Length: 395
Image 1 (spheres, one colour):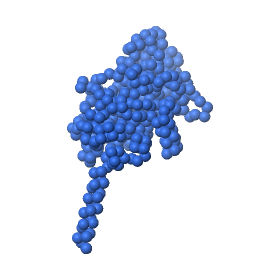
Image 2 (image 1 turned 120 degrees about the horizontal axis):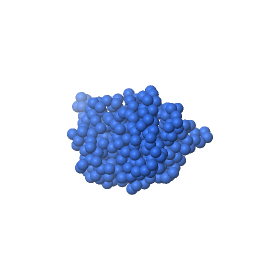
Image 3 (image 1 turned 180 degrees about the vertical axis):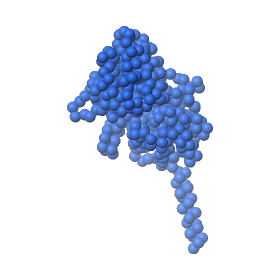
Image 4 (image 1 turned 30 degrees about the horizontal axis):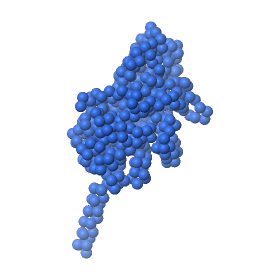
């Protein structure tokens, strides 16, 4: 009897081991705990990633004949913990890892990917430096970067040599890299950035910084634009409009971001800006499925970061199919120059720095009856080939 029981235990154990080996592990690391804003973004990424796996595998959850096992980990917005979680994921057999939202947290993880010689697919962090000076060959980026945002914003601001710009934003990597990218983007139009003010994250009062911008731009001739770029501060546009930029002939504008942000943008109807996603903008079958499925599962339309989770999942499944392998070097060879589907149209990993190339939108905001947020109306789609995204990784 003992022999039979022992044999049964051995058989069960070997069966479980075979199952574990048969699944393809993908870890998604996000910044869930420690910030209500990042928690919201992280949950969007998780939803989008699950929907992307569902769509890319036609509902089977399988690729290469094997189950995809998605593991979630929370950095709690701590760089040391993020690095440890990434190492743990690689040690536990994840084929690759996806993450994260905070550019600062993500940048702290990049060397770990190089140490383990395993792929880190960055989504949805946007800092240019991720595929620039901080890059290594194991880093791929399915999400946009600051340069995409700012080149689209430059188009939307309709710049010329008689335009001066003041920038206000928070003092951290996402905003700093964005400001640097905007200064580069406006050069082709002859416009100049005349003032910059960076406030602490979640600053209670923007008035002193806004007053300094107004003072610095007092003698500027031609159009004067006030560009707001924030990642954490709620209702920053409301604060700016309450301050009264029109008193200084400053035109307020911003990147078009999430639905909660758009709720606060109802104070600026007619404002034009660059946009990455709004669920009503893309006109294709993938987005139609995505919007309908998200509404069915969650009761709401998909938002900004849900799209980035979907794109990351699509990239993962596409890469595994193309490589027909889970080996890192095979995946790198497959992913360099690889096109993969997304709800906004195809994206392509640039071979030189592994940055995904993609379209953006120029939109104009309108207040529509019965809609809780300002609605981005399409002015035009900006195609990938219109962007001049710098290659800065010195490969």
